[in-house]
Length: 351
Image (cartoon, rainbow, N blue to C red; front, top):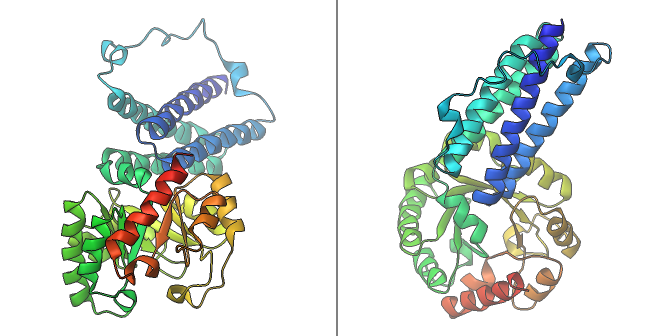
C-alpha cells in the first residue's frame, strides 16, 4: 500500500501544480475570470479528493509515504521539458501533465475507493473541456473582457428596422449587439442575423443570438444568450462548441453562481428596474448589481431600464458594463445615444 500511496501523493502534487499553471494562464494571459474561477474550482475539488482518500485510508497522510531520496524518477526530466517557447507552450504542457496525473489518480484510486476514483476521472474530463476552450480562438473572449456597452436589438422596440438600428449602434460604439426575437420565424431570423453578423465583423464587435444556438452557428455569430427558461448552458455549449461565448440572464446571486459553475462566459444582472422587454419579471434593484460587482467572478452587464435617468445609479452600485435596449434603439439619433452611454461607461471604468 505504501507504493500506491506514493503514486497518489506524486500525482496529486503533479495535477495540482499543472492546474495552477493553467489557472494563471486563464487569469493573466486570457484575462478570463470565468475560466480562472472554474479551473480554480477543479483544483479545490482535487484537494478535496485527496482529503477524502486520506480519510478512506484511516486518516493516513499520503505525504507520509513520500521518499524523495529513494525516488528513482527524480532526475528523469527530458530535454524537451526544460524548454518552453512561449506561454501557450507552458499551458499546453500543463494540460498534458494534468491529464496524465488525473488518469493515474483515477486508476490507482480505485484500489482504495472506486467512488472517489470516479470523481477524479470526472475532473479529467472537465480539464479536457477547458483545454478545448483555451485552444479555440480566444479573440471572442478577449473582446468580451474589453466590452462595456451591450445593445439589445428587437424589432418591436426599434424606431427603425433592426439592420439600420444595428448599423447606427455600432457607429456609436456598441461593443456587443444581441439580436432578440421571440416570435420571428427561423428563416427571417437567420437572414437578418447573417447580415447583422457581417455588420459586427466590420466594426470588430460581437453579435450574440438570443436563445437560438443553431442560428448562432449558421451565421458565425460570436455567442448565444439564454434566460433561465431557455436551453441550459451545458447543452448550448454542446451545440455551439468551445470557441463561442455563452451569456446567461440572472436575477439573484444563486443564479449567478450556477451560471459560473455551468460554464457561462458572462451574465446579465437584472432587470435592475422594471422594463417592458421583461414585463414578466420583477425588478431586482441596485442591490444585486452591488453584489455582482463585489463577487467579481464573471463579467456582468447591468440590464433593465438602463437609460439616461438610471445609468448613474447602476454605475454607483458598481457596474462597469451595461446592456441597453429602448434607451438606444428607440432614440431619434441611435448613434449619438449609443456614444453617450459608452462615454459614461468609459468614465466609470477609468475611475
